Length: 308
Image 1 (tube, rainbow, N blue to C red):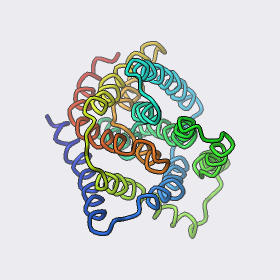
Image 2 (cartoon, rainbow, N blue to C red):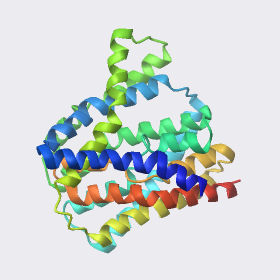
Image 3 (tube, rainbow, N blue to C red):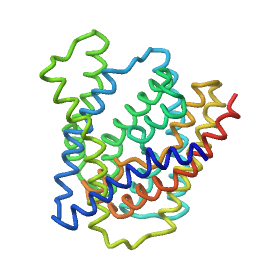
Image 4 (cartoon, rainbow, N blue to C red):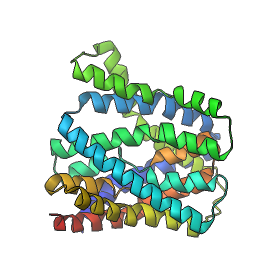
């Protein structure tokens, strides 16, 4: 019960308040959601990724093990959601929308505080989560955008050109390079990076609220609940199976399983809005999975004690 209340008070309620602010702002001023999504893609998200990677404490061994887990887990979830897509016979934009809602999860503003709640400020588990966050920042900005454009049969050159304009794919190697060679960031530059990165969560949540506020709310209950089931229940179960398969044990195994238990990422909404690909479905999935995660994440935390 303590975990449930803590997650509710420190994760879900603050996120919900910011989403409601976005709804109210849209109803009052009809905010331009395309402008908000571009701010997230080209300014706030790259600043957050750079800051977290530059300030992290990562070893090559930890990086290798975590990346191995991530790629095996990602492949397993991808194959699983592809099976569901074929069984449900989704067509057009629903194919990448359902796929993105399951394979892209909230590894930053939800998973990082959750990690530090469960492991009480452990720098080792935080480093694991930051690596996961790095990959969950890179993939939506590359594969996620490619899959949406491919479903619309857009020209491949235009799709590639779009991906190459996204700052986050350059920010990650730059952050590692500067960290690896101990290159300091000048104070007058680092201060704006801090300001912008601190604004990412608020801007992304307000964007989600604006999208929710502009919807007609014709809930596609079965598809939304299916996505929630895959992300919140099947996701951590697959994570547990992968750590067993790879022989990962102890605190690292627990941190990796916990990283798989979080709700759908805001990135799926940002992609859906930016490229007009099932934005209503994506927004409903993010909002509902965040609410339901109160219960599913609490259960995962309880079951983690059985991980050897």
